[in-house]
Image (spheres, rainbow, N blue to C red):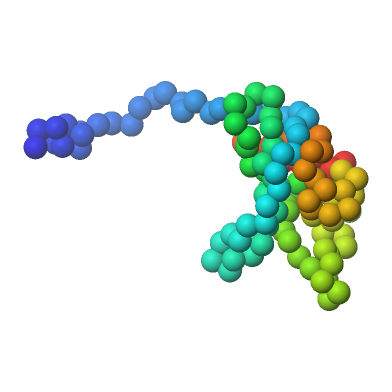
Length: 126
């Protein structure tokens, strides 16, 4: 019991946690997948990428792009139009066009730029 009692007496430390965030730069998309996320099970495109500073592929599922003269960052949501095609003007469509890909599968093997959105990397499309 003494161990537990000592743990109850621990105070808040003063050492900042080490944040290991990867630097933005060019990455290579090695795998793409569509995953259901959240309570509503909305579909989102998740890209596994090789980053020069990471030992294993990392997942990126957001993009920064220009909309109305401002940079907007959003998820790569999988939304279809009434003809069951990817929604024109969506973040995903903009990312595909910017990378020269006609569909999601064509992203595999592409090298694309990234940037930081807070502590996380996202694709850069502007």
